[in-house]
Image (cartoon, rainbow over all chains, first blue to last red):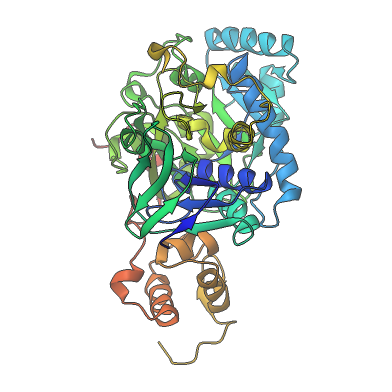
Length: 392
Length: 95
């Protein structure tokens, strides 16, 4: 691969890298996608996958989430490879009156911004999900939310443009990024040779700080682990993605609610989603434990405990597997989708934590617009590298 | 494993994956057991690959001319056999 030259080199073939690569090729760029293992072998195949509006904060977070859902609906027709997109909606269930109160206020503020979110009383909640516990206090629901298969999405992005403007270099290590005397990108050094390019996109997710260091750019991403349990296949007892409202409490520090001490330690909040294969995926935890993806029995226990609390029918159902992935966490709870002033030609798309799949279509689109020098679909200031350091 | 495997022969019984499905995944770029699993669901069912994983591995080795070591195996995970969520999450759970 020596002496190859590309318009853009994308580093990392997870959902961000594959989406960026796809959207860049669509803009007419000649793109190389470099990956140390293979497509979707890191975070993007160790997660669950939904594109939600009901887990976004009002404002820019919700705007990006909503635009991504719209983009997903387009991609369903645009991409030949089936990534199992379905729009069944999504629900938050509240366990206490206090949660219901906070959830209703949240739903109203989202309604004020024009988002289609319903507030459900306990009876309506059970109409949506007849197998949920009978003592829940209600919930909120949006029919706009989608589910999909995360690693198939990555395959779909790649398959559509591979060989038609995209070259994929799997099992390839990035050794360094060459800069010129103006500190601008000149190319990427790999263990298989040198790729000449003026533009590099760092899509390395939890490993992006390493690719940042190569050009002296500090990326404050930390790996945050999430554990998920898989059920045996069954009749479809769960119709849609359901999460306990406590999930919002564990995702955002703004919401303060009393939590079960047994689940507090690993920041466990119940989520369930049906898969196309008739399994359900049950999550999840959030804890900082380095890059390891072990599924400790204490975490499995805490997740299962929450699961049977919300769906008592699960008590008799089998768990066949647990798995874990590390998500690229940033304190700001907003990703970096940005260029970098001090290194012309260096771009970053990472830090989406658990929203990477959900936000990948818009992230890829925004990066492609930024690189093409077009006006981005959304104002990128909140996602900029120059935003206040303390918010990163 | 016999020499001539037909495309319609079943490899993963839980997920009904055939030899042909696995060959297609390899043609699409899969190079090890995990990649075949992601593309075909072989090994994702009730038995978690206990029945088919070695077969999948051998097919990969044969198709690509690589060693079993390279074709690898999927990550072993808890639980080792199906167990109810009631058992995993119950109050009698022994920490």
